Image (tube, rainbow, N blue to C red; front, side, top):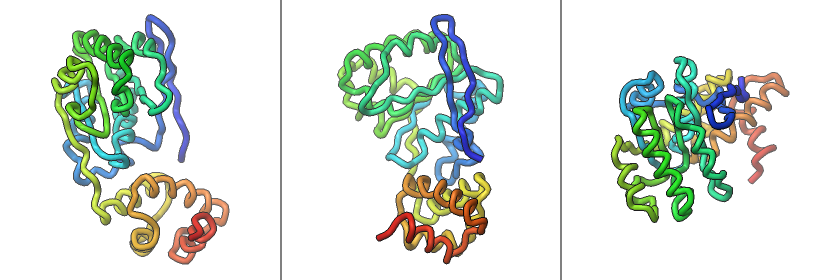
Length: 243
């Protein structure tokens, strides 16, 4: 039900390995108020639609999930794709961008972490010029819109604004539980309305925390060989998340 699928990809310059999480697909994403973004990404995964899409929104709105889903769908559609995450404290060497020119789709996540890193801003600018000239698809994500990234290279900000920019909307509390129930079902876990209501009222209104809860519930049900019920949820939360 869970795990990482790996597909080796070769570029002419050096080998790269693309990893995507099988759980982060379009079918496991609760679309709700973000139908427009999903529609554009689905088109991109089919090598159609926008050539550049910039997604932004707060943590937990599903940016990384959608970028993984887009790459996964592109591979299923027989197109080459690569997902690149820019971590906050340990940026990879900029040379990684030198091997990506020939891919049909590139998804770069957490773009805000390259701000104030001159070497990365310049490398992205040069990569952008090469890649866009090839008429390929580029999907970018950050926690803010392009103009608010506080980049030191104005020309890079200009280029990030050339494509379509969409904000991922935060889910309401009811939609949050619906999304949780949807993803749980994808993993083979049945969340009844009573269980969902209990979690909503007694656990958290934070979507990333709900995602972290899912593997705990999955493991607990497998070990106990029990379906999820309100008493069982109370037991799990008391054992793993004591007050």
